[in-house]
Image (cartoon, rainbow, N blue to C red; front, top):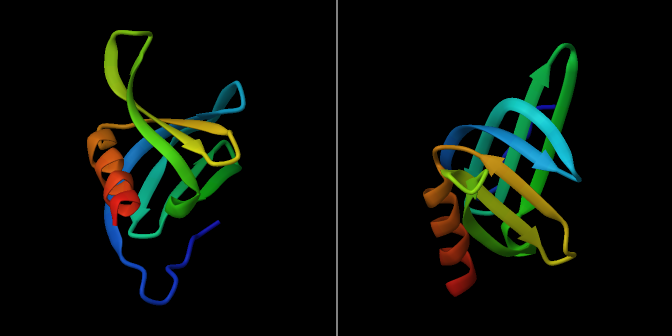
Length: 105
């Protein structure tokens, strides 16, 4: 699946990432595109594709987390509906800052 930008939407950042949701890895190695409106994750491995679209307006919180309590490489995204998605990425601080800016105005 290839995400298309909406009219007036702009890309803020792109990072390699892994996605963890629903108790397991959903995307081993993919691309996380951060726009001013959405987080877009796309991964393809062994002929299978995984994608996730998260509206920034639908995010209740985005926090910095450590993998295994030690490695500072995870951002936890909690949606307003309570679902949780973790991204392992080097761009985690930028993602948290973008979500915070969107929530603050």
